[in-house]
Image (cartoon, rainbow, N blue to C red):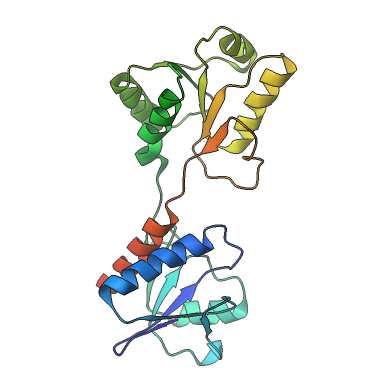
Length: 226
């Protein structure tokens, strides 16, 4: 929880969350600028703890991870004002990360690596495709969307290297496997999801940076304004 002279606010986050440090750093950044809040929570290393969740008397809660045990659920249910990192239900204000805002960064990254032709693989959201097309035109990049059967030919016929944008790392790994099986150089791939548990350490695959500090800051700011 966070304590001030005026209010007490719970912070629900799983220490195993890969964005744990970034989210809390964003929260601390807001605190430094805006208040004298102190951080508390359940099972948070290096932070004060909420000793008796059943006796929780606070009214507000920052939800970076949905409640995962009875203690967190008790705190969550007692709070009348909540801000979540992602939408939990219609009654809760939320801060989200949209890939639409990151399409230019993805294309700019590939262009900076020398790619002039960009392949879209399994990108199906019409608005996302429209955003990519608009940004590609501004960067003078060519977009292609070959079938799976034609991917090896697209990789082989592209010079300088082919850039690829995929929705997640599963599809990124598929592209790499196709290149490997056909003895072709691996293209440069950007995943629109920030997947850390799917082998994104492989060379040639990047994921869009999840702006954890920014989201932690914005979540605290939104809750403060409420």
